[in-house]
Amino acid sequence: MALKLYVDRLSQPSRAVLTFCKVNGIDFEEVKIQLAKGQNYSPEYAEVNPMKEVPALVHGDFKLFESHAMLIYLASAFSGVADHWYPADLQKRAQIHSVLDWHHSNLRRGSATYIFNSLIALALGRPLNLEKAAEGEKILIASLAKIESFWLRDDGPFLLGNSQPSIADLSLACEVMQLELVETKDRDRILSHHNRILKWVEDTKSAAAPHFEELHSLMSPAKEKLLSLKSLATKEAESHGKLA
Amino acid sequence: MALKLYVDRLSQPSRAVLTFCKVNGIDFEEVKIQLAKGQNYSPEYAEVNPMKEVPALVHGDFKLFESHAMLIYLASAFSGVADHWYPADLQKRAQIHSVLDWHHSNLRRGSATYIFNSLIALALGRPLNLEKAAEGEKILIASLAKIESFWLRDDGPFLLGNSQPSIADLSLACEVMQLELVETKDRDRILSHHNRILKWVEDTKSAAAPHFEELHSLMSPAKEKLLSLKSLATKEAESHGKLA
Image (tube, rainbow over all chains, first blue to last red; front, side, top):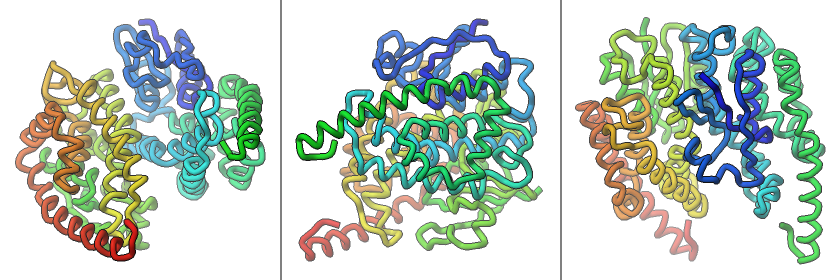
Protein backbone atom coordinates (compact mmCIF):
# COMPACT_ATOMS: atom_id res chain seq x y z
CA MET A 1 0.00 0.00 0.00
CA ALA A 2 1.28 3.44 -0.93
CA LEU A 3 2.16 5.80 1.93
CA LYS A 4 1.87 9.57 1.49
CA LEU A 5 3.17 11.98 4.12
CA TYR A 6 1.75 15.52 4.07
CA VAL A 7 4.39 17.69 5.67
CA ASP A 8 6.11 21.06 5.97
CA ARG A 9 9.75 20.57 6.91
CA LEU A 10 9.62 23.79 8.92
CA SER A 11 7.11 22.08 11.24
CA GLN A 12 8.83 20.14 14.00
CA PRO A 13 6.36 17.19 14.12
CA SER A 14 6.64 16.88 10.32
CA ARG A 15 10.41 16.48 10.66
CA ALA A 16 9.98 13.86 13.41
CA VAL A 17 7.73 11.72 11.19
CA LEU A 18 9.97 12.15 8.11
CA THR A 19 13.07 11.24 10.14
CA PHE A 20 11.36 8.14 11.53
CA CYS A 21 10.41 6.85 8.06
CA LYS A 22 13.82 7.55 6.55
CA VAL A 23 15.74 5.95 9.44
CA ASN A 24 13.54 2.86 9.23
CA GLY A 25 13.61 2.51 5.45
CA ILE A 26 9.86 3.07 5.10
CA ASP A 27 9.04 4.13 1.53
CA PHE A 28 6.79 7.16 1.21
CA GLU A 29 5.85 10.03 -1.05
CA GLU A 30 6.44 13.44 0.51
CA VAL A 31 3.61 15.86 -0.25
CA LYS A 32 4.70 19.38 0.66
CA ILE A 33 2.05 21.50 2.35
CA GLN A 34 3.57 24.95 2.82
CA LEU A 35 2.08 26.57 5.91
CA ALA A 36 3.55 29.98 5.01
CA LYS A 37 1.53 29.85 1.77
CA GLY A 38 -1.64 28.71 3.58
CA GLN A 39 -1.69 25.45 1.59
CA ASN A 40 -3.06 23.69 4.71
CA TYR A 41 -6.30 25.65 4.25
CA SER A 42 -7.05 24.31 0.76
CA PRO A 43 -10.27 22.29 0.26
CA GLU A 44 -8.13 19.39 -1.05
CA TYR A 45 -6.08 19.26 2.13
CA ALA A 46 -9.20 19.46 4.33
CA GLU A 47 -10.08 16.04 2.83
CA VAL A 48 -6.79 14.69 4.22
CA ASN A 49 -6.84 16.50 7.56
CA PRO A 50 -9.98 18.41 8.54
CA MET A 51 -7.98 20.07 11.33
CA LYS A 52 -5.88 21.78 8.61
CA GLU A 53 -2.58 21.05 10.29
CA VAL A 54 0.54 19.11 9.32
CA PRO A 55 1.69 16.39 9.39
CA ALA A 56 -0.88 13.89 8.19
CA LEU A 57 -0.66 10.59 6.33
CA VAL A 58 -2.63 8.56 3.86
CA HIS A 59 -1.81 4.84 3.75
CA GLY A 60 -3.98 3.13 1.12
CA ASP A 61 -7.49 4.22 2.15
CA PHE A 62 -6.48 5.05 5.71
CA LYS A 63 -6.07 8.67 6.82
CA LEU A 64 -4.41 9.79 10.04
CA PHE A 65 -3.22 13.01 11.66
CA GLU A 66 -1.52 13.98 14.95
CA SER A 67 2.20 13.24 14.78
CA HIS A 68 2.40 11.01 17.87
CA ALA A 69 -0.45 8.83 16.63
CA MET A 70 1.30 8.71 13.25
CA LEU A 71 4.65 7.67 14.75
CA ILE A 72 2.98 4.87 16.74
CA TYR A 73 1.05 3.70 13.67
CA LEU A 74 4.15 3.73 11.44
CA ALA A 75 6.20 1.87 14.06
CA SER A 76 3.45 -0.77 14.34
CA ALA A 77 2.24 -1.16 10.76
CA PHE A 78 5.60 -1.53 8.97
CA SER A 79 7.82 -4.55 9.45
CA GLY A 80 11.50 -4.14 10.17
CA VAL A 81 11.18 -1.30 12.70
CA ALA A 82 13.52 -2.13 15.60
CA ASP A 83 11.73 -2.64 18.92
CA HIS A 84 13.48 0.24 20.69
CA TRP A 85 11.54 2.82 18.65
CA TYR A 86 8.23 1.68 20.17
CA PRO A 87 8.77 -1.29 22.48
CA ALA A 88 6.34 -4.19 22.63
CA ASP A 89 6.88 -4.41 26.42
CA LEU A 90 3.78 -2.83 27.99
CA GLN A 91 5.57 -0.90 30.71
CA LYS A 92 8.30 0.44 28.43
CA ARG A 93 5.62 1.41 25.93
CA ALA A 94 3.56 3.09 28.66
CA GLN A 95 6.53 5.25 29.67
CA ILE A 96 6.92 6.38 26.07
CA HIS A 97 3.21 7.28 25.94
CA SER A 98 3.73 9.23 29.17
CA VAL A 99 6.58 11.30 27.68
CA LEU A 100 4.58 11.93 24.50
CA ASP A 101 1.45 12.98 26.43
CA TRP A 102 3.51 15.25 28.68
CA HIS A 103 5.06 16.84 25.59
CA HIS A 104 1.72 18.28 24.35
CA SER A 105 1.00 20.60 27.28
CA ASN A 106 4.60 21.33 28.22
CA LEU A 107 7.53 21.39 25.78
CA ARG A 108 5.35 21.66 22.64
CA ARG A 109 3.04 24.25 24.10
CA GLY A 110 5.87 26.37 25.46
CA SER A 111 8.08 26.13 22.39
CA ALA A 112 5.30 26.66 19.83
CA THR A 113 3.78 29.60 21.75
CA TYR A 114 7.15 31.26 22.24
CA ILE A 115 8.47 30.84 18.70
CA PHE A 116 5.19 31.63 16.95
CA ASN A 117 4.53 34.83 18.86
CA SER A 118 8.10 36.09 18.87
CA LEU A 119 8.89 35.28 15.23
CA ILE A 120 6.91 32.91 12.99
CA ALA A 121 3.68 34.94 13.08
CA LEU A 122 5.40 37.44 10.77
CA ALA A 123 5.82 34.77 8.07
CA LEU A 124 2.05 34.24 8.16
CA GLY A 125 1.36 37.97 7.90
CA ARG A 126 0.30 38.25 11.54
CA PRO A 127 1.65 40.58 14.22
CA LEU A 128 4.02 39.49 16.96
CA ASN A 129 2.61 39.23 20.47
CA LEU A 130 5.44 39.68 22.96
CA GLU A 131 3.22 39.09 25.99
CA LYS A 132 2.14 35.68 24.67
CA ALA A 133 5.74 34.96 23.63
CA ALA A 134 6.85 35.59 27.23
CA GLU A 135 4.14 33.25 28.55
CA GLY A 136 5.32 30.57 26.12
CA GLU A 137 8.95 31.10 27.09
CA LYS A 138 8.08 30.52 30.74
CA ILE A 139 6.44 27.16 29.92
CA LEU A 140 9.34 26.29 27.60
CA ILE A 141 11.96 27.02 30.27
CA ALA A 142 10.10 24.95 32.88
CA SER A 143 9.76 22.10 30.37
CA LEU A 144 13.46 22.08 29.48
CA ALA A 145 14.27 21.94 33.20
CA LYS A 146 12.04 18.86 33.54
CA ILE A 147 13.73 17.16 30.58
CA GLU A 148 17.14 17.85 32.11
CA SER A 149 16.18 16.76 35.64
CA PHE A 150 13.64 14.00 35.04
CA TRP A 151 13.24 12.61 31.53
CA LEU A 152 17.01 12.34 30.93
CA ARG A 153 18.75 9.95 33.32
CA ASP A 154 22.16 8.54 33.99
CA ASP A 155 21.31 4.99 32.81
CA GLY A 156 21.58 5.83 29.11
CA PRO A 157 21.79 8.74 26.66
CA PHE A 158 18.12 8.81 25.55
CA LEU A 159 14.86 9.82 27.24
CA LEU A 160 13.85 7.58 30.17
CA GLY A 161 17.50 6.51 30.43
CA ASN A 162 17.14 4.26 27.39
CA SER A 163 20.26 3.06 25.59
CA GLN A 164 18.59 3.45 22.18
CA PRO A 165 16.18 6.12 20.91
CA SER A 166 12.40 5.83 20.81
CA ILE A 167 9.78 7.78 18.88
CA ALA A 168 9.65 10.12 21.92
CA ASP A 169 13.30 11.12 21.36
CA LEU A 170 12.55 12.05 17.75
CA SER A 171 9.45 14.04 18.67
CA LEU A 172 11.01 16.01 21.52
CA ALA A 173 14.42 16.51 19.89
CA CYS A 174 12.77 17.97 16.76
CA GLU A 175 10.87 20.32 19.08
CA VAL A 176 14.09 21.51 20.75
CA MET A 177 15.65 21.96 17.29
CA GLN A 178 12.91 24.47 16.48
CA LEU A 179 14.91 26.91 18.63
CA GLU A 180 17.43 27.01 15.76
CA LEU A 181 14.99 29.45 14.12
CA VAL A 182 15.24 32.19 16.76
CA GLU A 183 18.00 34.73 17.28
CA THR A 184 21.18 33.08 18.53
CA LYS A 185 21.22 35.18 21.71
CA ASP A 186 17.66 34.05 22.56
CA ARG A 187 18.37 30.42 21.72
CA ASP A 188 21.51 30.55 23.88
CA ARG A 189 19.76 32.26 26.79
CA ILE A 190 17.13 29.48 26.84
CA LEU A 191 19.19 26.44 25.92
CA SER A 192 22.96 26.87 26.23
CA HIS A 193 23.23 25.94 29.94
CA HIS A 194 21.35 22.66 29.40
CA ASN A 195 24.38 20.51 28.64
CA ARG A 196 22.50 17.30 29.12
CA ILE A 197 19.81 18.34 26.64
CA LEU A 198 22.38 19.50 24.09
CA LYS A 199 24.19 16.15 24.36
CA TRP A 200 20.90 14.25 24.02
CA VAL A 201 19.97 16.17 20.86
CA GLU A 202 23.43 15.36 19.44
CA ASP A 203 23.01 11.68 20.36
CA THR A 204 19.60 11.62 18.69
CA LYS A 205 21.07 13.28 15.61
CA SER A 206 23.81 10.61 15.47
CA ALA A 207 21.38 7.74 16.01
CA ALA A 208 19.26 9.06 13.14
CA ALA A 209 22.18 10.03 10.87
CA PRO A 210 22.29 11.27 8.20
CA HIS A 211 18.53 11.90 7.99
CA PHE A 212 18.02 13.99 11.12
CA GLU A 213 20.63 16.51 10.06
CA GLU A 214 19.54 16.53 6.40
CA LEU A 215 15.95 17.21 7.40
CA HIS A 216 17.11 20.16 9.49
CA SER A 217 19.23 21.68 6.71
CA LEU A 218 16.48 24.20 5.89
CA MET A 219 16.54 25.67 9.43
CA SER A 220 19.45 27.98 8.79
CA PRO A 221 18.08 29.69 5.62
CA ALA A 222 14.63 29.84 7.23
CA LYS A 223 16.14 31.56 10.27
CA GLU A 224 17.79 34.20 8.06
CA LYS A 225 14.53 34.89 6.28
CA LEU A 226 12.53 35.10 9.53
CA LEU A 227 15.06 37.39 11.19
CA SER A 228 15.06 39.74 8.21
CA LEU A 229 11.24 39.86 8.38
CA LYS A 230 11.55 40.63 12.10
CA SER A 231 14.11 43.34 11.49
CA LEU A 232 11.78 44.93 8.94
CA ALA A 233 8.79 44.68 11.31
CA THR A 234 10.80 46.20 14.16
CA LYS A 235 11.90 49.15 12.01
CA GLU A 236 8.34 49.73 10.82
CA ALA A 237 7.05 49.55 14.38
CA GLU A 238 9.72 51.99 15.55
CA SER A 239 8.84 54.42 12.80
CA HIS A 240 5.24 54.24 14.08
CA GLY A 241 6.48 54.70 17.63
CA LYS A 242 5.40 51.30 18.90
CA LEU A 243 6.70 47.75 19.06
CA ALA A 244 5.02 45.23 16.75
CA MET B 1 0.10 -7.06 41.79
CA ALA B 2 -1.58 -4.32 43.77
CA LEU B 3 -2.81 -1.29 41.81
CA LYS B 4 -3.01 2.14 43.45
CA LEU B 5 -4.64 5.09 41.73
CA TYR B 6 -3.69 8.56 42.97
CA VAL B 7 -6.62 10.80 42.13
CA ASP B 8 -8.74 13.82 42.90
CA ARG B 9 -12.31 13.21 41.77
CA LEU B 10 -12.63 16.91 40.93
CA SER B 11 -9.97 16.39 38.23
CA GLN B 12 -11.50 15.27 34.95
CA PRO B 13 -8.67 12.86 33.93
CA SER B 14 -8.84 11.29 37.41
CA ARG B 15 -12.53 10.55 36.88
CA ALA B 16 -11.83 9.05 33.44
CA VAL B 17 -9.28 6.61 34.89
CA LEU B 18 -11.50 5.71 37.88
CA THR B 19 -14.49 5.13 35.60
CA PHE B 20 -12.43 2.91 33.31
CA CYS B 21 -11.26 0.69 36.17
CA LYS B 22 -14.70 0.41 37.76
CA VAL B 23 -16.46 -0.38 34.47
CA ASN B 24 -13.88 -3.08 33.70
CA GLY B 25 -13.83 -4.65 37.16
CA ILE B 26 -10.17 -3.77 37.74
CA ASP B 27 -9.42 -3.83 41.48
CA PHE B 28 -7.57 -0.83 42.84
CA GLU B 29 -6.94 1.22 45.93
CA GLU B 30 -8.01 4.86 45.56
CA VAL B 31 -5.48 7.23 47.13
CA LYS B 32 -7.02 10.68 47.41
CA ILE B 33 -4.71 13.57 46.56
CA GLN B 34 -6.66 16.75 47.22
CA LEU B 35 -5.44 19.47 44.86
CA ALA B 36 -7.31 22.18 46.82
CA LYS B 37 -5.22 21.23 49.87
CA GLY B 38 -1.98 21.17 47.85
CA GLN B 39 -1.48 17.47 48.64
CA ASN B 40 0.03 17.03 45.17
CA TYR B 41 3.00 19.11 46.32
CA SER B 42 4.01 16.80 49.19
CA PRO B 43 7.46 15.15 49.04
CA GLU B 44 5.74 11.75 49.31
CA TYR B 45 3.65 12.43 46.22
CA ALA B 46 6.67 13.71 44.28
CA GLU B 47 8.00 10.14 44.58
CA VAL B 48 4.88 8.92 42.76
CA ASN B 49 4.65 11.70 40.20
CA PRO B 50 7.50 14.23 39.96
CA MET B 51 5.23 16.45 37.83
CA LYS B 52 3.01 16.88 40.92
CA GLU B 53 -0.22 16.33 39.02
CA VAL B 54 -3.05 13.82 39.23
CA PRO B 55 -3.85 11.14 38.24
CA ALA B 56 -0.96 8.73 38.62
CA LEU B 57 -0.72 5.00 39.27
CA VAL B 58 1.54 2.54 40.99
CA HIS B 59 1.21 -1.09 39.86
CA GLY B 60 3.63 -3.26 41.82
CA ASP B 61 6.95 -1.45 41.30
CA PHE B 62 5.77 0.34 38.18
CA LYS B 63 4.87 4.05 38.29
CA LEU B 64 3.02 5.94 35.59
CA PHE B 65 1.41 9.34 35.10
CA GLU B 66 -0.47 11.12 32.28
CA SER B 67 -4.05 9.89 32.11
CA HIS B 68 -4.04 8.80 28.45
CA ALA B 69 -0.91 6.71 28.98
CA MET B 70 -2.58 5.26 32.09
CA LEU B 71 -5.79 4.36 30.26
CA ILE B 72 -3.82 2.62 27.51
CA TYR B 73 -1.70 0.75 30.06
CA LEU B 74 -4.72 -0.35 32.11
CA ALA B 75 -6.57 -1.48 28.97
CA SER B 76 -3.52 -3.50 27.90
CA ALA B 77 -2.20 -4.92 31.19
CA PHE B 78 -5.44 -6.25 32.67
CA SER B 79 -7.27 -9.21 31.18
CA GLY B 80 -10.99 -9.05 30.57
CA VAL B 81 -11.09 -5.53 29.12
CA ALA B 82 -13.35 -5.65 26.05
CA ASP B 83 -11.60 -4.82 22.78
CA HIS B 84 -13.74 -1.75 22.01
CA TRP B 85 -12.10 0.25 24.84
CA TYR B 86 -8.69 0.07 23.11
CA PRO B 87 -8.90 -2.01 19.93
CA ALA B 88 -6.12 -4.38 18.89
CA ASP B 89 -6.71 -3.41 15.24
CA LEU B 90 -3.89 -1.02 14.32
CA GLN B 91 -5.96 1.47 12.36
CA LYS B 92 -8.79 1.62 14.90
CA ARG B 93 -6.20 2.05 17.64
CA ALA B 94 -4.42 4.77 15.65
CA GLN B 95 -7.67 6.74 15.33
CA ILE B 96 -8.12 6.59 19.11
CA HIS B 97 -4.56 7.85 19.60
CA SER B 98 -5.38 10.67 17.16
CA VAL B 99 -8.45 11.75 19.21
CA LEU B 100 -6.47 11.56 22.46
CA ASP B 101 -3.55 13.57 21.04
CA TRP B 102 -5.92 16.18 19.61
CA HIS B 103 -7.59 16.44 23.02
CA HIS B 104 -4.45 17.81 24.74
CA SER B 105 -4.07 21.03 22.74
CA ASN B 106 -7.75 21.59 22.02
CA LEU B 107 -10.62 20.45 24.28
CA ARG B 108 -8.42 19.95 27.38
CA ARG B 109 -6.49 23.16 26.90
CA GLY B 110 -9.61 25.22 26.26
CA SER B 111 -11.68 23.70 29.03
CA ALA B 112 -8.95 23.71 31.68
CA THR B 113 -7.84 27.28 30.86
CA TYR B 114 -11.41 28.58 30.87
CA ILE B 115 -12.59 26.87 34.05
CA PHE B 116 -9.39 27.44 36.03
CA ASN B 117 -9.17 31.15 35.30
CA SER B 118 -12.89 31.87 35.63
CA LEU B 119 -13.49 29.83 38.78
CA ILE B 120 -11.18 27.11 40.15
CA ALA B 121 -8.22 29.45 40.81
CA LEU B 122 -10.20 30.80 43.78
CA ALA B 123 -10.23 27.37 45.44
CA LEU B 124 -6.41 27.40 45.26
CA GLY B 125 -6.22 30.89 46.77
CA ARG B 126 -5.27 32.46 43.45
CA PRO B 127 -6.95 35.35 41.62
CA LEU B 128 -9.22 34.94 38.63
CA ASN B 129 -7.87 36.01 35.25
CA LEU B 130 -10.77 36.91 33.01
CA GLU B 131 -8.58 37.63 30.00
CA LYS B 132 -7.04 34.16 30.14
CA ALA B 133 -10.50 32.68 30.80
CA ALA B 134 -11.77 34.31 27.59
CA GLU B 135 -8.81 32.89 25.63
CA GLY B 136 -9.59 29.45 27.03
CA GLU B 137 -13.29 29.80 26.20
CA LYS B 138 -12.43 30.55 22.59
CA ILE B 139 -10.37 27.34 22.28
CA LEU B 140 -13.08 25.41 24.14
CA ILE B 141 -15.83 26.64 21.79
CA ALA B 142 -13.76 25.80 18.69
CA SER B 143 -13.01 22.34 20.13
CA LEU B 144 -16.66 21.57 20.87
CA ALA B 145 -17.52 22.56 17.31
CA LYS B 146 -14.93 20.06 16.02
CA ILE B 147 -16.34 17.29 18.23
CA GLU B 148 -19.83 18.01 16.94
CA SER B 149 -18.81 18.28 13.27
CA PHE B 150 -15.94 15.81 12.98
CA TRP B 151 -15.29 13.40 15.84
CA LEU B 152 -18.97 12.48 16.25
CA ARG B 153 -20.46 10.78 13.17
CA ASP B 154 -23.69 9.25 12.00
CA ASP B 155 -22.36 5.66 11.96
CA GLY B 156 -22.64 5.19 15.75
CA PRO B 157 -23.17 7.11 19.00
CA PHE B 158 -19.53 7.27 20.13
CA LEU B 159 -16.46 9.19 18.95
CA LEU B 160 -15.24 8.18 15.46
CA GLY B 161 -18.73 6.79 14.81
CA ASN B 162 -18.01 3.74 16.94
CA SER B 163 -20.91 1.62 18.17
CA GLN B 164 -19.25 1.08 21.56
CA PRO B 165 -17.17 3.48 23.68
CA SER B 166 -13.37 3.65 23.77
CA ILE B 167 -10.99 5.18 26.29
CA ALA B 168 -11.22 8.38 24.20
CA ASP B 169 -14.95 8.67 24.96
CA LEU B 170 -14.24 8.45 28.69
CA SER B 171 -11.44 11.00 28.55
CA LEU B 172 -13.29 13.58 26.47
CA ALA B 173 -16.70 13.09 28.10
CA CYS B 174 -15.19 13.63 31.57
CA GLU B 175 -13.66 16.84 30.20
CA VAL B 176 -17.02 18.09 28.94
CA MET B 177 -18.57 17.17 32.33
CA GLN B 178 -16.13 19.61 33.96
CA LEU B 179 -18.48 22.35 32.69
CA GLU B 180 -20.94 21.18 35.38
CA LEU B 181 -18.78 23.22 37.78
CA VAL B 182 -19.43 26.62 36.19
CA GLU B 183 -22.49 28.84 36.47
CA THR B 184 -25.48 27.31 34.67
CA LYS B 185 -25.84 30.32 32.36
CA ASP B 186 -22.18 29.97 31.27
CA ARG B 187 -22.42 26.22 30.83
CA ASP B 188 -25.60 26.64 28.78
CA ARG B 189 -24.13 29.41 26.64
CA ILE B 190 -21.18 27.17 25.75
CA LEU B 191 -22.81 23.76 25.56
CA SER B 192 -26.63 23.78 25.33
CA HIS B 193 -26.84 24.11 21.51
CA HIS B 194 -24.56 21.10 20.99
CA ASN B 195 -27.29 18.45 20.92
CA ARG B 196 -25.01 15.83 19.44
CA ILE B 197 -22.43 16.32 22.20
CA LEU B 198 -25.07 16.27 24.95
CA LYS B 199 -26.45 13.00 23.54
CA TRP B 200 -22.94 11.51 23.31
CA VAL B 201 -22.19 12.38 26.94
CA GLU B 202 -25.49 10.74 27.96
CA ASP B 203 -24.63 7.66 25.87
CA THR B 204 -21.20 7.46 27.51
CA LYS B 205 -22.80 7.82 30.94
CA SER B 206 -25.20 4.94 30.12
CA ALA B 207 -22.43 2.73 28.72
CA ALA B 208 -20.43 3.28 31.93
CA ALA B 209 -23.40 3.10 34.32
CA PRO B 210 -23.62 3.36 37.25
CA HIS B 211 -19.95 4.36 37.74
CA PHE B 212 -19.77 7.40 35.47
CA GLU B 213 -22.67 9.08 37.25
CA GLU B 214 -21.49 8.03 40.73
CA LEU B 215 -18.03 9.46 40.08
CA HIS B 216 -19.62 12.76 39.06
CA SER B 217 -21.84 13.00 42.15
CA LEU B 218 -19.42 15.43 43.78
CA MET B 219 -19.73 17.96 40.95
CA SER B 220 -22.91 19.56 42.24
CA PRO B 221 -21.70 20.28 45.83
CA ALA B 222 -18.32 21.39 44.44
CA LYS B 223 -20.11 23.80 42.09
CA GLU B 224 -22.03 25.35 45.01
CA LYS B 225 -18.84 25.82 46.99
CA LEU B 226 -16.96 27.33 44.03
CA LEU B 227 -19.78 29.70 43.16
CA SER B 228 -20.02 30.93 46.75
CA LEU B 229 -16.25 31.57 46.70
CA LYS B 230 -16.73 33.48 43.43
CA SER B 231 -19.61 35.50 44.84
CA LEU B 232 -17.44 36.46 47.82
CA ALA B 233 -14.47 37.36 45.58
CA THR B 234 -16.70 39.47 43.32
CA LYS B 235 -18.11 41.39 46.31
CA GLU B 236 -14.63 42.00 47.70
CA ALA B 237 -13.39 43.15 44.29
CA GLU B 238 -16.36 45.50 43.92
CA SER B 239 -15.72 46.97 47.36
CA HIS B 240 -12.16 47.68 46.16
CA GLY B 241 -13.52 49.14 42.94
CA LYS B 242 -12.09 46.49 40.66
CA LEU B 243 -12.93 43.04 39.34
CA ALA B 244 -10.80 40.16 40.64
